[in-house]
Length: 392
Ligand SMILES: NC(=O)c1ccc[n+]([C@@H]2O[C@H](COP(=O)([O-])OP(=O)(O)OC[C@H]3O[C@@H](n4cnc5c(N)ncnc54)[C@H](O)[C@@H]3O)[C@@H](O)[C@H]2O)c1
Ligand SMILES: O=C(O)[C@H](O)COP(=O)(O)O
Image 1 (cartoon, rainbow, N blue to C red):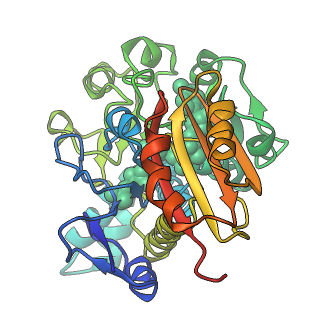
Image 2 (image 1 turned 180 degrees about the vertical axis):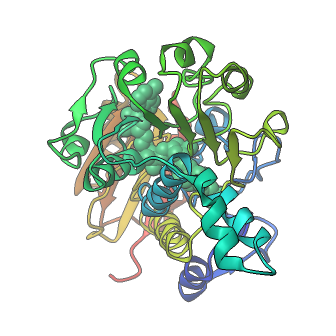
């Protein structure tokens, strides 16, 4: 049995998938894989036995990607698995930013006793809001979440302007043609009545919304952050709220500096917390983990290139290496020199790393005994794994 270690509450759908595929959950000493949600792994000791870590969710800023990449540990996430859940909470947040629903509920409860109807009707004028229809929504980041938010806002009769310099042919098609594409973020900040941020927390995106960017917003703008704490400079947002340079700030990330502020609404990081999103993300995560550990196929990795090929030979050798010249020729020469016939060789590189998956049929026990050690000795090879096709 292969052991998988888990952190956080991982949905039973994902755990059951792993159990059905003969994995132990949290029992053995030397886990091969880790399944995690938001637990901060930056200061955890990741056992040497670990070959893969899957983040059941989108954001992976809680995982020490650089260190793990140098060790040959493949890190995955589950793109889109919880995007609908975040979209729905973002729409709820937009409505909370337009209508004083929370205060109105409090007021309704206070009307108890006596003529409830009269007291409600006389005093409800204090809970008038505005409509989203006709207002402009600015969406920063048009990925899995942002594209859904942008498209849904059109159905609420909002005008939508979006900004995402990272869109490509595979992702741009998701975005409705009525959404205006801004050339820079300042365009969004100046035009929007509501601004919602859906980008990952990276070094570059830290305090992406800071005092300077808030100064570009309309003074009655509403700012929504369902991405990550640290993407918005909360102190700058608080100062803008205090000076009437921002109307309301809604964040899914609690911050001591924001508690009890009358213009702030805080939710406790529940954007992806629906039964459906947790099930979908955990199942995607379990499948990605099992697929890599049993076939060498890499799907949705955030630190190495994806390779997803049908496993039609008896064996495969997966070689994670640095993206430097002469690796493929050295690897294929090794197989040739050792009289091992290559049926198929796939190679892909992304940034500093590359992955080569070699498919073979004839592979005797002597060759199997030394191939891993010998390949690992080629300079710039990080980790070699062997896969056996149990269906052949
Ligand atoms: N609140 C929650 O529970 C919750 C749930 C899911 C995701 N998230 C957060 O939301 C983020 C986005 O999720 P997603 O599923 O849409 O991810 P995604 O990877 O599908 O999309 C992110 C998009 O942001 C774009 N981007 C990156 N930096 C940018 C920048 N500086 N300006 C404009 N665009 C930029 C990328 O090109 C990409 O298209 C995640 O990284 C995560 O931190 C939070
Ligand atoms: O990045 C994500 O997917 C979300 O922040 C969800 O986090 P969670 O899995 O801890 O709910």
